[in-house]
Amino acid sequence: MSSLLSVHGLTRLFFHQIIRDEDLLIDATVGNGYDTLSLFEFTKNFRCRLIGFDIQQEALTAAKMKITSPDSVDWILDSHENFDRYPQIREVGLFVYNLGYLPTKDKKITTMSDSTLKSVKKALNLLRDKGGISITCYSGHPEGKKEIAVLEEFVLDLDPRLYAVTWTKWANRKDCPSVLFIQKS
Figure: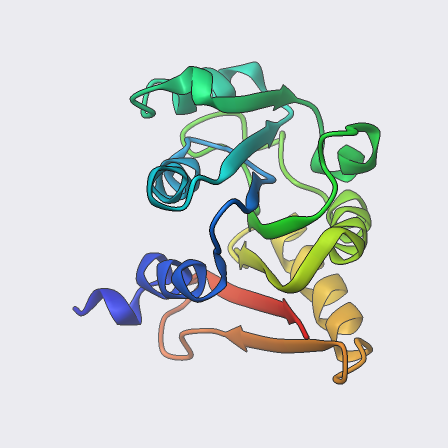
């Protein structure tokens, strides 16, 4: 299967369209660090700064092991809903979310619809012009279904003069992740 038809391939295309030289990049949900690693590659070519958030130290530790120079990433052990508590987070080029739980770990520790919605609202206010938000959503667990419903309702009300919104899902694959992209005009 072509990488262009995968979640991974599609999100990377979005990253390439959004990221500019010297952008601030935020991985809002580090997890196992695969998105962090992809974003890290952009820091080399575009001289971007990268900050990774997660509520689990175990996730941050796993992600650091994937990065060749982990000290070049600011690692924050905190919820993504707390972006506004960090003065170094001002104008952001790209926010990346990969919702759900840490694979192969405690499935009770998961992103929650309330904190995700708060975080996305804050992210919208921190985006630079033409900046973007990428959110990978999972419908295969109850909280994931709830997050999708909350996000769907929220993005329907975003002003189309200010934001371009698209949501891609693989209609013929049961419980396959879907990807929400928001770009500021």
